[in-house]
Image 1: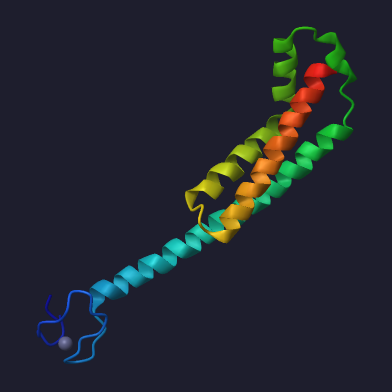
Image 2: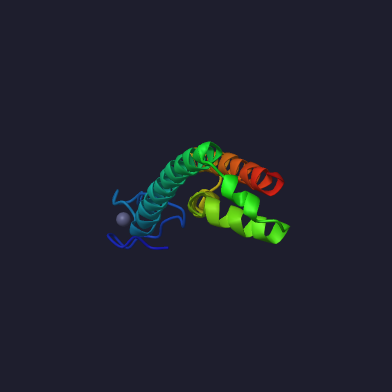
Amino acid sequence: MYCRNCGNKVDENAYICVNCGVILKKDNNTNNKTIIKKNNSNGLGLISIILGIISIILSLSYFFIDISEVGMYTTIYERLFYAIDFTFPAIVFTIVSFALALVKKNKSCNQVGLALSLIAAFLIITEFMVIIIY
Ligand SMILES: [Zn+2]
């Protein structure tokens, strides 16, 4: 490619023109994009962590709520619908947390978000078991 400032031929991957010292626009833009991408994915990772924590708190709270009314449901389908209805907010938070964590799964905070959403999912499944065998 050619330098936009002095017009001399420069290397395709050059960051700075060796003739005039100007920072080459193409590489500059790429760098800016990389920084924006990085910030976005960290933001998503943080949201994923926050939603993961909310999911875990919600799913833990279900273990302290009286579920004796589930006794009037006899079939496994009625129990399943009750369980979905009962744990619905935690299910939504967990799915969103999980999905956001997967956007950039190599980032450390996304991995924390992923771990938290998996713990929440495990707690929700345990609550399902409790409701079905109650
Ligand atoms: Zn130049």
